[in-house]
Every structure is written in C-alpha cells, then in structure tokens.
Amino acid sequence: MQKPTHHILVCASFRVQGESKGMCHKKDSAALLPYIENELSDRDMEDVMVSSTGCLSRCENGPLMVVYPKGSWYGDMNEEKIDEVLDALKEGKEAEGLLLA
Image (cartoon, rainbow, N blue to C red; front, side):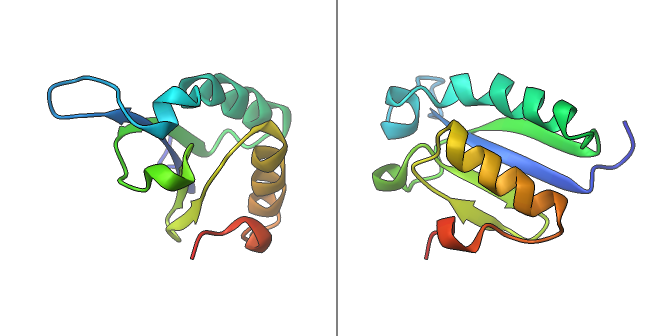
C-alpha cells in the first residue's frame, strides 16, 4: 500500500497495561473495524487506512472515530454514521453534522 490519503482511527479503549476498558470497548467498537474496511472496499477507497487505538479519553462520546489528516473527530459511531462519514470523505468533505466539538 502506498501512503494512505486518509487514516481512520477507531478507539478500542486499550490502556497501558493492555486492558480494554471504557465506553468504546463496551459499545463494541472493535466490530466497527471490519464494517469500515468492507465499506471502504465497496466504495473503491483502498487508499484509506483503518486502525484501532488505545483510549482516546472521550469516553462520554464513544465509540469514537478520528479521521486524519484533517483530524476530524466523530462520536457515538454506528454503521449508519460510518456510511455518512465515508460518503463525505469520498467527496473530499467532512460529515459536518456528526463532528464533535
């Protein structure tokens, strides 16, 4: 893979000791990863990388997703919201209605 145009980070609530705690983990954020990867493939967006992360410290908004290079933060993610973010990303935009303040 060449350098990705975007990098999507999904909080998996990992802590330093390796334990998963927090809202993102409890709301099954790990299940969002294969969904995102499948949707990227369906949209021919193979230049986007997806990774899980340690705790992003915004548990009240979990599950969290951050899209770089712009640094767009999205909360309370589910499949419907992911579709909206990916559609906007494909158009070179942010899903403004879903952005966290």
